[in-house]
Length: 467
Ligand SMILES: [Zn+2]
Image (cartoon, rainbow, N blue to C red; front, side, top):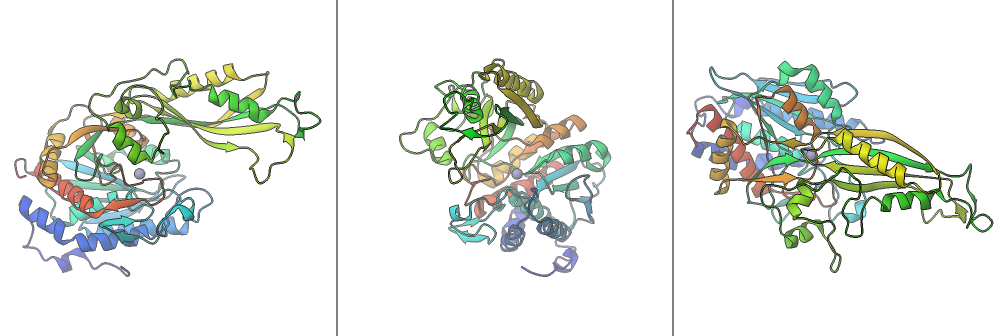
């Protein structure tokens, strides 16, 4: 799609406002072609808000998001500055008398595409194959943007509850800047219920609400041993190799089974059912004959326990290898923290452990720390009950609780700022959507059901018993 969307009221004169669940369902279904066109338009923009990537496409995605929210009939739509980051897009419609207000969250930035050779289709040319739209960001999280837009459009500008929308522009990189924004602008975002459309169902058509998220901590570790590289023939065998020291430290983090050896990071248990080993192997693409690592059920390992991953190394590449003992080596280490854990305490435990296991008196330094807390939903009130009814109608069965291994640090900030608000995490990013991976895709039937559930939820919350 190109050009500006016409204003909403021109397309939908008043008098045809859908008020029944049937009408809501039909309205979302009827608008799916437009929803898909809009998703394509948004996903064609490489809005990668990482350093070293151009700013212009990120700002272009903000402008399109603004345009889409305006087309959803919200009377107030604007970009808001977020200090040190890209603008967020904010929109609102006032609550009808006595009705609650719902805040809808998504983000318009995306992960970098990575190696283009790993993609079946060009990452920023959204391509429809077998009912799924392929492209970077089609699921994470432009499907979230479109789920909100499609749900809101169904009401033709007359919303059953107060609506606030915040679409973030830099979630995938240093998303903590929006957290500071939330803390400084509580009135702008205050709501009775908050929908975070940045997760998904375990399988397409298998409805779930994400009730637990792991937090995250990350840091860079640097090992130094020599003033400069020395010849591995003349000095190797006696000169302390920084890379060898770093590898010993990193391998010490886990035992032979893949369980964490750092003291103070116990295994947790998840109350609820996770994937089977077969499902997980398929989703994660584990190669034949290769074992999974760690102990406990998969739900325990993925959602309620710590996980440590080395995500980057600064070492000479194979192509640039020379016969030298390395004087310095660096690694980026990421730690996933269960909802009950504290990311700062966790990162201190891992750093202390690495210092203790460092061999040969090598110099060890740590830097570039980031931390974000996890999330544990409480058992649920009126909003969760409304969502259960809405999802049951949209998917044909009620949702179950699942955890997510990933982190959305903003959720904890929202919880702290608005302790009385119910936070509901669901969306069209099913486990097989390939978020952050090549060939990311969203199932369009899943997107329709999620948008339908979201619209029915708004209706149900505004007039309990409607759905
Ligand atoms: Zn996301």
